[in-house]
Length: 598
Image 1 (cartoon, rainbow, N blue to C red):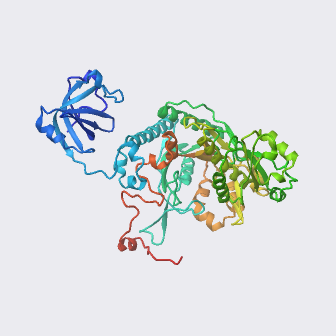
Image 2 (cartoon, helix red, strand yellow):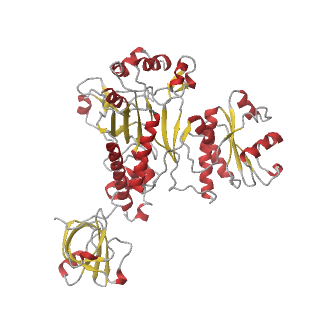
Image 3 (cartoon, one colour):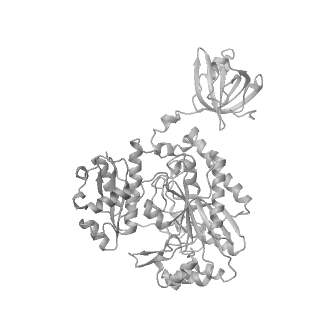
């Protein structure tokens, strides 16, 4: 069965060589009695000729179905000049077959595998037959890309002194994070493991252990509602280092991403990346993961409109909120349907509506807006000057609390950009890679529903040293030593310098976050104990491998770069996962399945 070459290797120097090829039948074509079979394997394709001079194999070749697995032997011939296929790597030759072995005939396919046709097939059907979907060149290329990216990461971290260390997947429940997958313990009745959301605590223990530089291509699990960029199980490039400060992490990750982009795409990305404080990111772009490939920057008009005659604006400002606006330049031809859609989106973020002005010419009398009559000449002048208003523009407003106003206009900014792209008035290139660091996140957020502070990232994040004194008096205005690396509106990864002093970690957990002694001891007791035995200063980061590969592969869904992904219902349609279990299996792990009232 041994093949002499793959289906991408043969070329003119191989003419007259005897070869053996194995692969899948891409297509069979009958040209006046001579059969031409395109034979495909993982590496490429070769044209095989079956001549009537070999009647027995010619007859069998005539009955071949696409995607059957065959083995052929034959002699390499040069194609005539007029039949050379410049689109194929092997397009200058063909193999004149003298034997044929059919390893496995293919049944009728459930859907066509030609790229254009397959892309129109319902995704559930393609996921049901994922092994067929992965045969497509596009999907195979994405798997190769992921493998190349992973190797690039491993090579880089190995060169920089990191140890690849496996950490447990079965951990304990930490319910203050995302919802977890629970695993009952057969040997410990009534107790449960939780599938690890992240190796956070283990990697910090490795730093206490003196490993100094750890990484893992780690599998992580979260029982969350799914979407295009979220799966119940996902992969992250997980890292932790001792004796570092934030600048050390920035330089390390910039070097890694520079290598990955060069190795995978042969693209040189400039370093160092810009650094944008969290308040600036929110104020300018309405997002902590801004897409900076286009402008449409948000401006604050709270001061200019503090005495506005428009009650909605003034009421929000009087309550301590703000007024923000941005110019969707050139979108003045927006339709009523598009406006309605944007209003609906704003409402999902808590807005009661979406104020806007359509600019028609230079005279405001010709502008279109339900709020225009409430805006004074002085306020219009401020809008004109700061937003560079011209004929055909569209101004959007948000008046509410600071964070909500930023979020509303941040989302509308993205939607407006897509409308401008659709009209050909803006170009957002997928070949443009705008990396940046978002830094100086708040350490704490106040949870109104819970009536207490919660950690913005996680409770092990270190505060900026000069802000530590605010822990007792002003927790909301403490900056953290957290950082996110952002690319084109996606968060590639995030991390922080960690707290390594037991006294400070205790204070954050008990005094600021208000955790009880029992909770602190049960969830983090071993960490606090470890910090008393010479814990080094350390910090880390985790980057989403799936998301990074989706961006590298220019695909919108991370499902495309995962070999066997789940649907939005968390199902593997190919293997029928999840599925029922036997009553005995439940008894063995001390679990009962009951119907609970809704």
